[in-house]
Image (cartoon, rainbow, N blue to C red; front, top):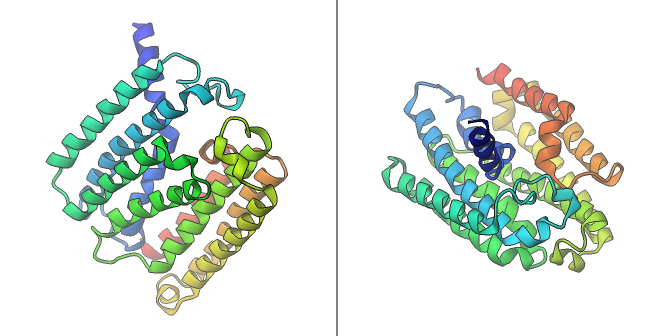
Length: 292
């Protein structure tokens, strides 16, 4: 019995539960529009989209581990991954990923949801399967595709909500995610050059330049967003205070990468760093004060 439980937990680890947190981005549009009503149809629509994306991203993570299997099992910084510990064979990863794709397709067919939003999830699936297979070998494009995945998720949920998100938020989100990916690649360049072939095309100084540019654009974009007449009239000075939280949060990420040189797994850092969690809670709390 205990062996069965351990086996199930091991398999659940393959879909990277900590990374599924990213799918919470789907709730951002209804949160900021003040429509986060647990009994509303709109909320249930987003929940259905959330379940759809969990199946979608789970299959993508499994396929990514399948294609990276040989590199991961010799990479000491990824030795704790379930697949890297050889508890699951490469062939099993492929079978499980196809299982999740099947679950996704079944959900896609039966879930009653806006077709355009569902189609964006399908496009996400195809894009990231392609990414895992070969697009990740193309310098710079492999980094740009990742924030595009976040934009696809946000827009798929945004389309459900008639009070659509201010366009500037898409720019802020893209730059913030691209910023973390750049930090990840910079860290990998220092320690894992032999485990990711695309790293040989990057120069650390150029990555640093891109990091600083995206850092500034993300902060400036968020500041302009909170100072715009429409947003300021809605959130007031609480919205402006959120800029301080964004600045501290991104600065901590920058420090973690450039000083402590430990940012090869951004999600692991975010979920394990108490200060980052507190900053996130404070950030959304500032808006809750005004919206709810």
